[in-house]
Amino acid sequence: MSIPMHALLPSSPIVPVVTLTDATHATALADALTAGGISIIEITLRTPEGLKAIAALRDRTDVVVGAGTVRNAADVTAVAEAGARFLVAPGLSREIVEAAQSAALPVIPGIATGSDLLEAIALGLTHVKLFPAGALGGLDAVRALSAPFPEISFMPSGGVTAENAPHYMRHEAVFAVSGSWMVPPDAVEARDWRRIERLSRAAAEAVVGDGA
Image (tube, rainbow, N blue to C red; front, top):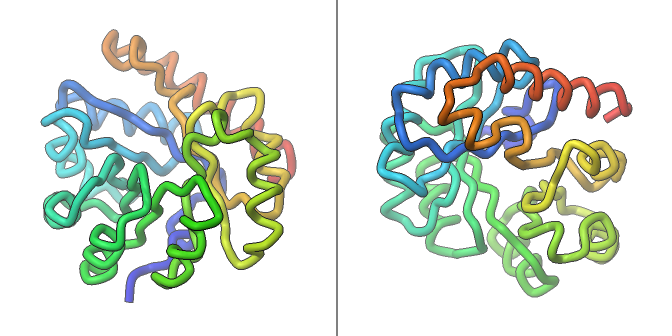
């Protein structure tokens, strides 16, 4: 049995999404996030450095490291070997979900429709990523989809910002928000860890202070 996704989330349920072009930045990035009060990170597989960055953080006890942009069973195997503790997929795939379940790793697939949710439930899932949340209608989409599927918890991703994240977290069906506003690519490339720490602290305080 895998550890439930909600058990991996820290007190501030914000999942930064990071695409690294240099895996040597992983440690400093994790330091900046944790200093700002965020202790979870999704490192995408959009570059060859993704797996290396996940592996670089696998022994950290102060940050939960997951893999994003997981697109097939081979990716599941690779990120499991690298030390990822959860997986995020851009869409819903039986192949990915079953591979993750076999590896005892929590998986959060992307969904956009009621049909997706019916399939997710059939696969035994309770936590999904609403993606792309902004394009799908934002909080209105959460309200519409959660009404007929009260057993499902959502993580909006795509178009989530510092301004709307607290509003998402007010909804009882939202278990976390996902985005990159606290880890802007230009700050990562410039190694501006202080900026990332400041943005992370502001994000964590906004969500926690809003009563989430």
